[in-house]
Image (cartoon, rainbow, N blue to C red; front, top):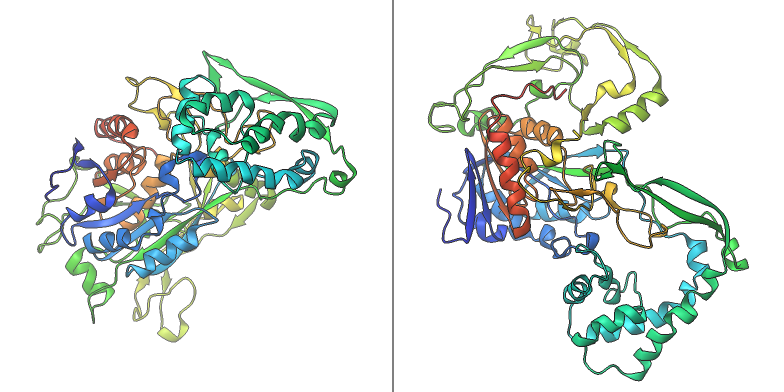
Length: 539
């Protein structure tokens, strides 16, 4: 396939990632050239002030139209979305021409609520002072400078960390803020002459806005590790765990006391995944489509959950013009895949923490063994034998008797402690803004003692804020992609999809617009490519 005159690309084995806007990269791909699309696009939440998360690209129908064009008929798309915004993502994918087949809920237990404490907000005088903040924001917007330029000035002066984004609140209307006098002085070289009413707002900010809040009654202190990652490991700096202490307080004013215990957000615990499929040719069927194009169904047996009654399956070579003309894809040959003959895969996926919570609630459950069923007639068809037209034939699904918690009915994705930084030994540590996988893992309470928005994390080589667990991406790829097929991810991020694809012998093509993530992508892809084989159990 041709890649045009794009700036640069990363090639590692059967993986290729192009640096550039996915709308440009997709145009260089041939029609019907990929087998599946598995991607984690921006959630359009303006997360952590990242520019790439507030462009509207996830809702751009033309992106998904290009994905539809390059996908083979019957090929599936799996696209992550945010719980607040995924409906718009789903509509854009549907408007592009995909059939919406289902949605998968990835549930995790590591999220933190980005919630405002209503009583504390009243004590701070937020209700009365919002108008003053918006006045400041309106003027800052009118100056013509951007939040990015303001943040850079504060970063260069050492006033905030290199990933700090506090200046975004000087330009946004959802959580507006007035700059303190010291920070405003650092911004003056960028600003036009400051009018008197703005000077007054800045001067009064500390003297008035926080007066009532400083009078609050401190009832105690809380000390805990600075943060936790998705796998519950304590963060360390120089080998030492970092702790943080802050005051606990009760409401001060009578108005605030009436609203103690009220917030503005729920704890994030799931992310939806849109499941779509490219329509078949007019008049075609599932059977005809899979024979012609090699896609169209879900790989149920390879994704079964539960008992380990195993059935060896060779990776098939595609024939009759399908795939690559009869030679199996993938650089590794054998060993054969082993499929678990367990429970039917569900449209809910858990992480280990949420699975533990579910099992704690359910207690120990017991299931009896299920033997092969013989269909005597279509009329006697039951839950265990749902294939029509199999009179007198044995339906091969079996399940051993087992016991355990309710989580054994679902796939549980594991977030390895080393997963994030595998292959990145040569990169320097940077201040990370996350650690577990779901966006909920990076949203701290805005009323934390630090006063910052977003988690403070231990330095990491992979500083991308929303890294998905590799085991999760391997499971999703296997569910919708034929053995050795080509997986497309137009929003490559830190390369989790590509890493997962290479580990299981798939081809991969991706695009990434943020240049600082390219070394991370290359390191993770190279690590996956160099693995002789991966025997990690996904089920």
